[in-house]
Image (cartoon, rainbow, N blue to C red; front, side, top):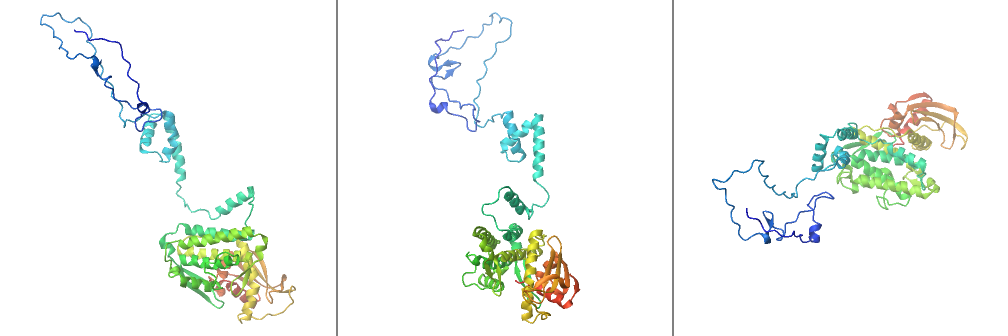
Length: 462
């Protein structure tokens, strides 16, 4: 056979910087550099450089018919075909450590499609990774509980109490504002996930007007608007913006009627669902922040409610009670369970009602709605007393002066007793049941009992 021309081996010219930095798209760090096409000098024909190949090559002569046979032995090995360059879409195998690090994301279904395929293929032949994957998948299953996802209403209070126990706040919230903060948060949690239909659900607001039960029909959105404009009385007393403006009416009833009149459809939930919730909660947060920064003197600041006034510490308790009462109205309207307040907050609200009873009883006497006093006494001296007993976690014993708000109540002067559980007291004081139908244990002076039951119902208002 003719021999091919031979020459010294030639070194290919150096590649450019762009070629050295080239990589296949999608290659992992440290992957295979992108192949470059051969240069003209490196082109070969049958393993020979183009500039060294002869211009013309004669065909090799075939064996003559009488040529000697080939020597025995294995046939010559044909030349191996050149290796094909990898394509950009070829998958690069992932290492065991990398696949194991992806198991957590795989259990949470957070891997890409390619990563998921690679992990699941690896689990088929790696027992240790398969066992770890099962444990992770079981752990993820615990996160998808079938129980209600509603937060525990007292979770926020417990977290705050734990945080303050470890490191007291530099500007702590006053204790007397805690009931309002907690009840507003519980009501806000009830409202958080409501849909449009629930915001427009009909709600019947009830109260005792002094002589009989009365009520007003509105919606869930209308109830929150009512709370917002009445909270505005407290906001204005603290120098905060009043949602009703400077010339707003003074009483809660007049303010609510004016709000429903000025905001067409507000009482029936018109407008974006839940829009009023943001305004109400932002105002509530501002109230709590303001009294927290104001110092001790703010506790005795008077809040005018039109016909009467309350110290701001009692006004916050009054607003907490209103949140609880109206949250119960909303929960009843949308058929959702709602629990009573924490025992400490509930006891503070009942205590507020008991402290307001002597003044309410005196007002009813002036209006001719209660019996006249039996025995007038000087201020600060003992007089006829009624024993009010409320049973339950937030209950206790209170002694109500009967003949004069300034008289000193004494257990030894008790002429009658009224016993109610905390649920019955709530229904009576919120105007949800008439005084004649209150579930109460009664003993002693029937006239005094009647007057105190009606005075308790008269504490309610819109």
